Image 1 (tube, rainbow over the protein chains, first blue to last red):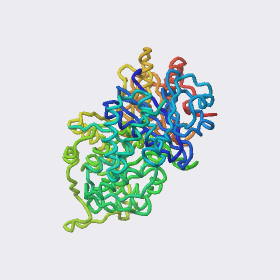
Image 2 (image 1 turned 45 degrees about the vertical axis):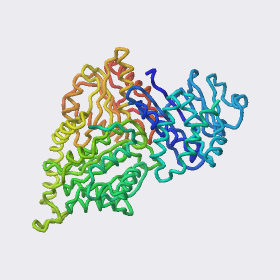
Image 3 (image 1 turned 90 degrees about the horizontal axis):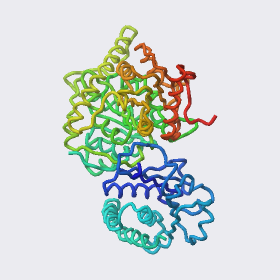
Image 4 (image 1 turned 90 degrees about the vertical axis):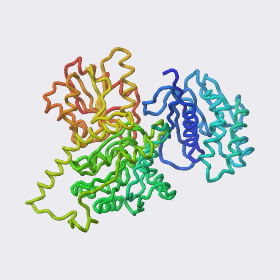
Length: 190
Length: 393
């Protein structure tokens, strides 16, 4: 099962963590992988902590449990660092990606001694610069694809463009902004 | 041929319904089944189906309208979950006793209370004696495939009973996974046109539907219903055989996984079967003879076939995702144990209640069940036969 990649998303209701997980499943599927993208539902309300998951594998995925020992964790909202144990079970040889305006040095003390790689991205900056509104999930999707090496940048952008054309068929004016957000996020993640 | 896709279980069932293009779909929303009528409504709006889509004010009404449409001679269905199914209760019996071959896409969810939106099987298990055929799925692919086969089973002249196509709420209904879809024309040809023999809108053959039956007739009516249910077993197998020809995917009454030489087995329904298969692979790699039976057809219950499949096991754990409050286990436990008793089986059997209200089931949990069975075999005694998995005491 060494080819299995497991990702856990932590966000708040309304920020699009579930959508990002479903989009990641979508784009990984396009590269011929077996995928799972699913949310963990509690009481749904705006702002409540929510979790979503991805499995990506070369083999058919049969397991239907949540993910407890992920290789990667994505934190959509950094305020969750104080309330949710986001690094719980996270593999040491994995990585955590955090959406923040702070520096890595400022963030690391909040990670309960996590020893693996830490990546940050200012999804707010990327989102405002490219889409004029705050949609953190689009930049984070691009950033995790890069961090986890799920596919090469060119393939990812090509697949996302066709995915956006389908998803935003009724509002094509938002496609360019979303594509720009993906490209900028791939540069901005550090 | 098949088209590779990635879809949630709800999307998959909605697409099967688009391909079936039923005559009537009355709908009332309830989590987690809401997406099925929601997707279907867009197919109606886009003109991709010519179904009469009726938005009603309750589940009691959605099932009533489905019954009315079916009695009139239409191919009809609805979708629901949990309390929605509970609100249909009396109508479920009306549909079955009137021998109406309608369908229900059920997305399994716990019944209240405490209020909970997540998966267990308490809704459909409570309806197990209503006279409906019940078929369950492990994943989105099976939910889709079962939906495609539904009307062929329910409308068969030897059966003529309503059918419930079940899948696990959120776990499969809201998880996007790989799936292979059939072409629209393949489904259309497979399902075929519905030609009801007796129906209300046939002026040449006036009939009554849902009449009063005095003591002189009621029991014979019920006996006839049971006969239809008995016949359903062979029909489910035949339809699966034909389905395999167009899809390459084979289905039976239940699936056997490493049962040829299994000494310890788990009997389970739904999505946790996939998780159990991963546990079995891990244990098999260590040389342990463990296997799985995943129930597909729960009503009618394939008791004799199941006992035969379990005849060589030393110990079996029957997994119930619903309480029965019998003080000795759940509904599947009772069915399997009675099947084993009828077959004079010597297997040591225990019954677990697990996964209530969406309690997560991990590979490790299922490994612990096989470990418990190992102890039972060593002891030569089942010990406590009514157990809970993953509970905080």
